[in-house]
Image 1 (cartoon, helix red, strand yellow):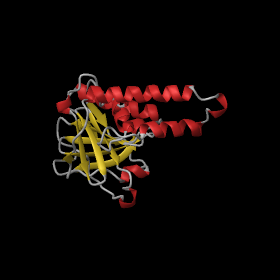
Image 2 (tube, helix red, strand yellow):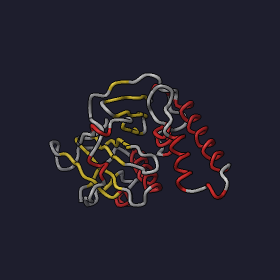
Image 3 (cartoon, rainbow, N blue to C red):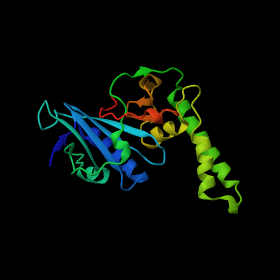
Image 4 (cartoon, rainbow, N blue to C red):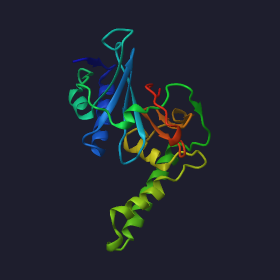
Length: 229
């Protein structure tokens, strides 16, 4: 089994935390791993948010099969989490699994450009808090006979599909970033950004990224095997 050597215990702990959060939303979650040199990208898709989450992991030494070798495999998030040794700062790559459809459609590696209008991290977290409060209020106001899954989903779509200002970034992407530990308290505005490449928008923070395809882009869906850096 291939072993990955992370730069330190903190990096291993952050990877474990990310995998744990993915498994909270989907016990059978899979992740796609792409490694080249000393960079590892871990892709996951928490179903509740309909976004692609990307956690960049720093390796202490190049991927073990050699400087010219690359790793590209979809594995069980649970098995990968079980293999993480935080003290040793290592993780073993589990056997490959049949990847879900999203694993074959990743954001491009290059071609990203900065987009204006992203509020500061504190304002983004306030937007999420307000949206959560609105969802709770609207659902609690429903009479029992209308409190169905379909009605809850309708309210959720109405709230979470709203855009952040004029950025075209849906609120659900920011909610995902916060829920996955990417938008932490104390994060500086200078360390966050909104990027676009083709049909993709990406919210970048020091702890990970959340990517989403813009509305109307499904007809031009393209397959990419590149990681979002």
